[in-house]
Image (cartoon, rainbow, N blue to C red; front, side, top):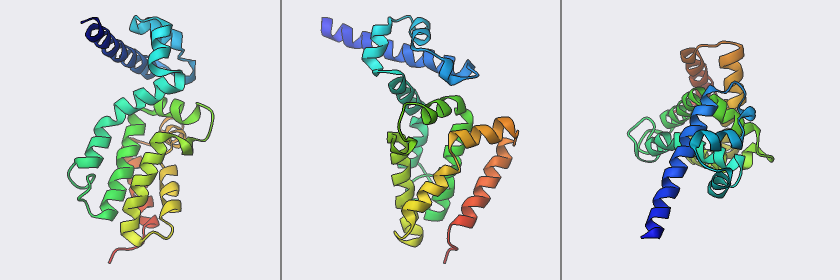
Length: 194
């Protein structure tokens, strides 16, 4: 029985930490200023619990990002068109990028912290590799494998969190205008359909 209680405690602590981190990042003007000590205090757990559960700040960011991204991932994996796997490839590319843009607009502080920190290339991050592989696979259905790898990278660059944040926060481009600009860009990049 003690093992079951400790598992329940671990699940409860994990949920409390993710909720606390979510609230702190949402309120923070500078995500890099949110400390592990602040997250632990807000969650009502010790720093040791936090580090055991997530390893480090980058691990916490990845876990929070993944939790927020789950609904998008589920729609991509099993949802209806235009986002889901049964959508025509050109429509799906546009829908995938639009979904990522909207996600990053809604979660830009967290996305900026994850993409900008953690030492190392953002292109080697697990979430980036997953989206790149998915997009590359859909692009191969549009125009074959030649160039789909680079095209996937180039299209994903259009929804990098730092660019999205710059356009939304500094240039004050409205959400719907950003979405329209992205759709126009995707239409220009993809080869014409049959």
